[in-house]
Image 1 (cartoon, rainbow, N blue to C red):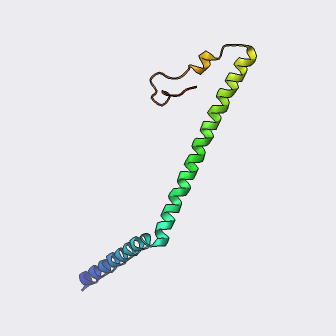
Image 2: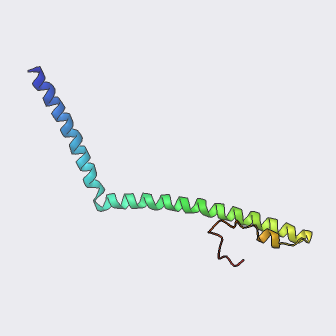
Image 3: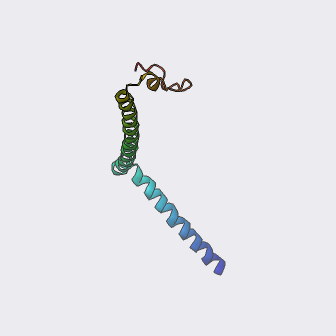
Length: 96
């Protein structure tokens, strides 16, 4: 009798877990669930883009400051403009 009660208890626990998972999966495919996931992905992408743009702006300001300092000192800025890495495919094709 005790074995049967243990197995009934295990069955009830497995059933509850299965129902919860199925309910959660069903909610995730409803319009509200999809909107929540898309909204979260959009917010994450927005934060990532903001961080990227901040890094680009910081690098741009540093390069501008370096160029302005060289111009104020009367130095040739061509070497500063040619500091590109020859092995970096991302810099090839730039016209400046």
